[in-house]
Length: 180
Image (cartoon, rainbow, N blue to C red; front, side, top):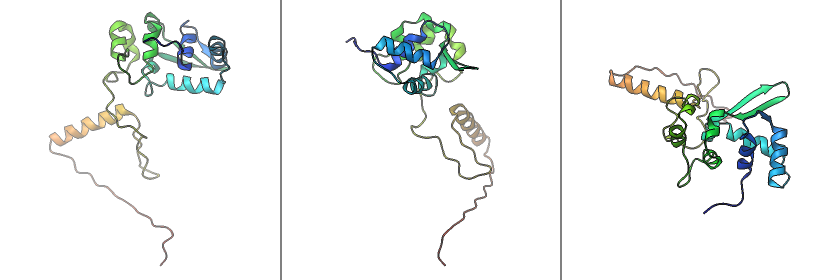
């Protein structure tokens, strides 16, 4: 069943299909004209932030963000323009039956592979939610990058297979406000 109403994300993608770099105010104006309704620039900026983030949607691999003296300019890489608009829209979705996936896009337009880092085409295996919190001030590590997490995971497996590794952990606990 074909949809007759586009989302704001789809209107934004439509403005980027010309391949020319554009700033948020220009995209906002074009989206407002195309949709026939007033769109706020902060809404467009929020959607563009999601669309250009490959952790949030697969289209993020193919959105170029360039800093200029007047702000950021956004555009799609020219190689993605060989895909149909509906296929490009589908790259903004993580789920959905029958959607056009990143793997399908890479098969249909192999030149797109250079924009996707190795190992990122496999289905997501990370747990939902926030990245782990830092436990303290110094010497703590926040692992938000799944590539780093995968690398560390394979390192631990390799060390375990070779006999293990001795690790010393020093923990300091401070209690404040105890009545004594």
